[in-house]
Image (cartoon, rainbow, N blue to C red):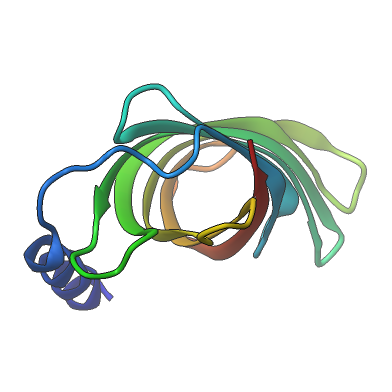
Length: 155
């Protein structure tokens, strides 16, 4: 997995040319993956953005609710207008409820690596990313994270 990540990052670096301004300022929609929920992205500079998620997950009688904030650095991909790759990091906080009705606080440090595409002439943006994380509570664990697809309207 680590080799695949390094290969993908190196490939994206070689495709990158000069930094250009983003093709949208804000985007609001949903992110679908291991955690499903509401997603909002806003650019603070031409290539820097905050990606905020309010998401839910229920699996094996364990229910999780989480808020994630990720700071992302975007880079255009040469000869692919509207397509950018990005990387960054941040964290998550939330709650986890176990099947025996016990609950606990969920806290993690998160990374992100992905692709972002803005359709030319349409207010639609897609993003596909991988989010590995280090869970800090309730149990400390390094996880492979999840892969998700964001579908957003831009404004």
